[in-house]
Length: 112
Image (cartoon, rainbow, N blue to C red; front, side):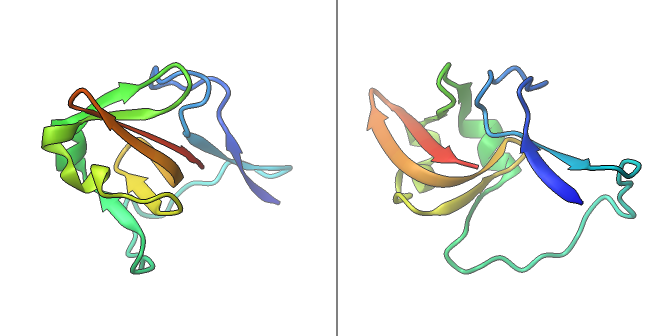
């Protein structure tokens, strides 16, 4: 059985509830990917915040797991609506529950 489980010890320093997931295979040896990249087709409503935007705008996660961004550098993040499924390159895959913008920063909350 293959299971995606939330990591209780994020190795990226984002805290306990950062949204990182670990893939576990129960009762079988660990999975070894056959390639390092895969072609996928996303639903049109899925938003992808690419690696360049993350490098430019991502400011880290809060202690309660919200992702924070520089508002001027990531207007596409500020435009997200609750319910959006978003891929934050290298950081998280979330169903967005709230987006707040104050003081030049954007905070995104969601569930993996």
